[in-house]
Length: 117
Image (cartoon, rainbow, N blue to C red; front, top):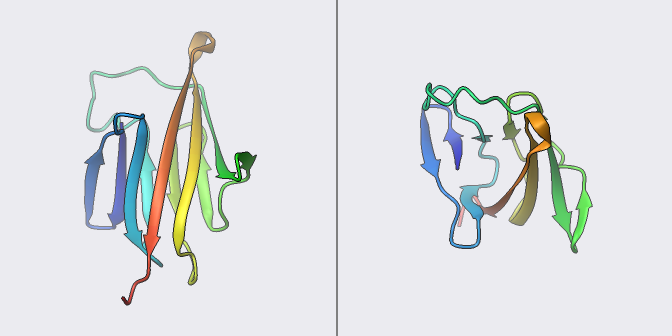
C-alpha cells in the first residue's frame, strides 16, 4: 500500500492492482509524495523498515531515480517535483529491507500527463 500526495492539501490512499503495481496519474509540474509506511494512519503498525532503496526502470534496467526526486531511505518516503517536459510513463521499483533481512518489492507506475491538454 502506498499513500501519495499530489496536492499539498490532500492525500489519497492507493493500493496495488492485481499485478502488485501501484499506478498514479498526475499532471506535469505536480508534486508527488509516496509514503510506503504510513505509521500516522496505522499507529498499531509499529514495524519500522530498516532501509528503502529505489530505482527507475528503463528498458528493463535499474537506473537512478528521476531527476528532481528523492527517497528518505529510513522512513520510506519518495518525493518528486518533476520539471517541465516530464511527460509520459515512469516505472519505478522500491525495495524495503526489514529487520531480519526480510525484503519486499513495491512497483510504482507514474503516468504524467500534460498540464494543459
